[in-house]
Amino acid sequence: MTPVDTAPAGGAPPAAPRLTAAGRRTRDRIVRTAADLMFRKGVAGTSIPDVQQAASVSASQIYHYFGDKSELVRAVIRHQLERTLDGQRPLLERLDSIEALRAWCAAAVEVQEQRGCTGGCAVGSLASELAESCEAMRGDLVAAFDRWEAPIRDGLRRMRQNGTLTAEADVDRLATAMLAAIQGGLLLTQVRRSTEPFRAATDAAIGYIETFTA
Amino acid sequence: MTPVDTAPAGGAPPAAPRLTAAGRRTRDRIVRTAADLMFRKGVAGTSIPDVQQAASVSASQIYHYFGDKSELVRAVIRHQLERTLDGQRPLLERLDSIEALRAWCAAAVEVQEQRGCTGGCAVGSLASELAESCEAMRGDLVAAFDRWEAPIRDGLRRMRQNGTLTAEADVDRLATAMLAAIQGGLLLTQVRRSTEPFRAATDAAIGYIETFTA
Image (cartoon, rainbow over all chains, first blue to last red):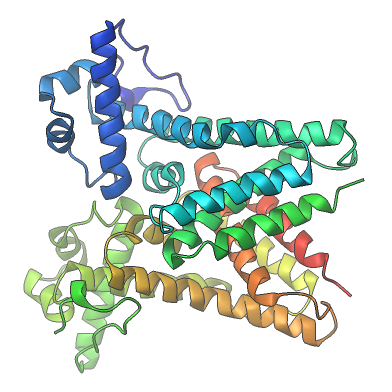
């Protein structure tokens, strides 16, 4: 297996070995368990023995599937991105109006309320902790944010096509601004234990997008 | 000394013992050194022996000034906030027009460019790592973001008073949205190693504020 630390920035993760159904279930359980531990205690605060104990697997099983901790962390980045997108996919994939943008953000507010505003963004927390750790991981984080930004940009592009937004609307920049508002809003919401910062941030981003309505 | 873990949320930090000039210099050196290490390696990745070695002090000196690691971390939060504000104070304290907002953000872009977009926001990184660690630290982070937001809000209030913004402008919400754009923009700028996300995020926030111009 390619050592992760020497993988190129943004390079594809090493191909997973062919797994049996049972092997895939074990691998998935390890990733889910590691993701939950890292979400609560940070990557640095989560050791392989912690994962081993919580997932009820042996150390050799973890190393069989992941080679080393950084490979497991890279799998966790992909897992947390998918989990984050899964939660918002129905609304995220149907952004075609200002109202749809507002409904998507309102659903995120509800999720935060259910959690008592704890935890922040699973992907954002990983990004903050790991952006300087190694180029391969930073590449994974770039890919994760790109994958999140793409459906936002697609939605804005649909809005430009359906006449909601004018031709002047730079959908790439607007999508980035929207994602940044979400990230900054979630961090302040986590710290302040209030959904108000997230709402203020996303209302402003949507309000700015609205200045490009036809 | 009050154990930090039991201090109330947002409670005042324990009063620093009266220090001689030499004592204050040593204490400051410990905080600066710890801040630099924690900025590069995270709080979890920085041990008291690491700080001790890098600051050329004994463990007992660190414990004399700080009691325990979490008290040192709380001092680091205050230090990083002050350092962050110091860098932008001249522009931050004179926000009185849309142009002044733009100049303030342009200066932040320049800082990011000088750093090759590495490191992100020192305060934001601490917030992401520590928001769930204990209520006292979360309280310190709330105080840090409040202190950062206050001059933004004051600037927007001046803009409302001098007729730049209309009476409808909710300066509290706009200041929060601006700070969130900065935080989210810095995180994406760090991950993508490009100032474009920060510029897109802050241009959008300022563009939204501009919708309230008279």
